Length: 618
Image (cartoon, rainbow, N blue to C red; front, side, top):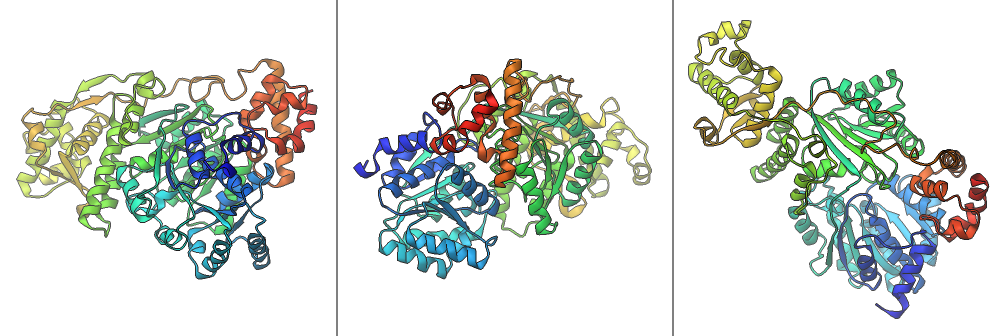
């Protein structure tokens, strides 16, 4: 590494500015490589410390006289929070986005040209505008561009779960400023998406850093959908009462319904979706970020770039479209490393809805087949009877061992051979089609198999079929599970263009001939046993394992932090994370020297808050 950007400089910044005694995982190698001027592609899970991988090189290179670091970020909320947190740590940072007045934006641009900013955050559409590029040209001409950091880099790929066309234009950075190093970062990218990022951003020569995708503090739990909202209420009340969480729903109408229901049950909940007025949406997001114990009920319009570290649970009331989306969304829980829970309930209708959206998409067949493959992988995870984490990590190409911290590991499900029930279902679909050449939906097929003499069954004469009533001992819930598995196996497809009717495929032949065994898990949606003062991972709630005196200190520190955050108009975690407060409460430091050794307290925060913290501790 260049002497001007020495390793000791980076290590010093880590401790003095951010208050961390040591790097985590591959952070050290990444920081060293980028600070020395190397290009990098970084894949690191949410909560793994991606921001430090460009913030520390930015500070190191700025101290060496190499200029400003430009951070490309897709979301205004993330820019605000990052800049606010950096300011608290004593770093000169700013953003340029639509929330600024013309006068305020002009002031930032003046500071930029004067070299007074270390990190500047901007959206891709602004960065690639001719006016902004002209400003970068002037900085480049005088050696004032230190680094380009492209956050949420998966947005550049059509195979990613959040494709944004504006990201494609970022190739101009390398073409126009070839000597400026670049670091592209993302938390979620399968092999196909990674290749697309490299090609689209011209990172062929960049060094690649792929961290473990494992988030060991998150417990994964997937249950069979029966009464989804009641299941959700039971989950929150028994596992996360009074804690912050996010609930994802597929539709805007569902978001509004669930938020209203949670409020009626006494929870502090807010809705968020693209159909709301933008100002109200922003107000709700700000309240969520700045409050403790609030539940945000949202569509996927909410979440990317949300930096709130104390989200204790993420719940899905509807199945996401693929594993990347699921991983990205669940990764918003437990960013502080403390126990958190990823809970999802799913059912046959979720499968049907997702298939229909793919089938009705105007995309080409190749792209649709790719989407179907991704959905099948998620279905496999949901139906799995083995370790959820092993399956999840395997999708990203990472081998692992059973985790001991998912529902299947903690309470292995009972399995049963559903091959006979599967053959009955397939036979019924086949005979119905043979009789009249018409296909029917799942409910009608199951009514025939269970021997229900409904009006529709009698009108069609389907009570005469040889399979009528032969599955009378099977429940609707059980048969729906079998049908989901058959869809996952590819033996049955759902025709969204024909009222969600069921169609047999060539793969059904192997099941009917007993060449494929259909092994199923017993219902996993039994009520959760009530837990008292227990957290998501079977551990006590945040702070409750402390001795009584330390618990009191922790409560007082949180109250003090909330007051300071209100005064500064910042989220509480921008002052100190919960983990920092826990460490202070446990250690009970009596001097500034003792306080400086606590993780998360750098020089600037020690100067700003040290004496106040010590007073609270006393």
